[in-house]
Length: 250
Image 1: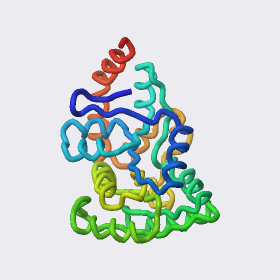
Image 2: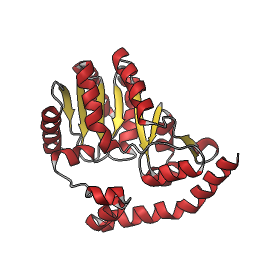
Image 3: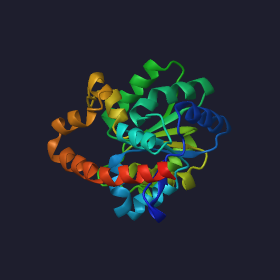
Image 4: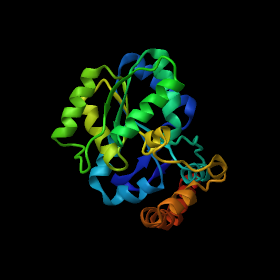
């Protein structure tokens, strides 16, 4: 399904999990860099009003569906897609990298979270090599001098896949910047995924995720930050439903 109109249109261009892993296996084998974004409703509220975010998204060659509303809208449009949250892709992608003997890198969050996530991943995925970690400071410019230095170190580390945990839109902008500065590295934006792995954040219980109520858990944990965000997401749903129906009709 395509979201938005005109120059702000973004499409989910990798519909299934099997297609994603087939593509990534090939790219990682060839050390052909890429940028993977996981689109959700929050992103769709930001893209039309943030030119830098939109430009970065358009530089991503792989876009998958993150969030059940995206999956439901795609189904309504007649173009079904698999649900692929970034946080649930980390361990399977690390397993693929271990199989291919491709080291990984972790960028974002905090030093403590990265240390915990690195330990958790190497414990859960035998043979995984974490070649580089970096926790940029608060106020980090994803296209500035510090970003350039991190990407230079990343390219020299031998890592083939970099997980970015900076939050949107910063992580997607950094990934797009990295496509030019470290073209042999793949970038995957995964939000709070490393914090979940390290235990610095607690994800909603599985039953809430199955019932599509993870948003309610997150709103209860941090209402000041999350309630306004979800209000914006709910506000754009009628327009997205109408767009999906138009696409279905053709």
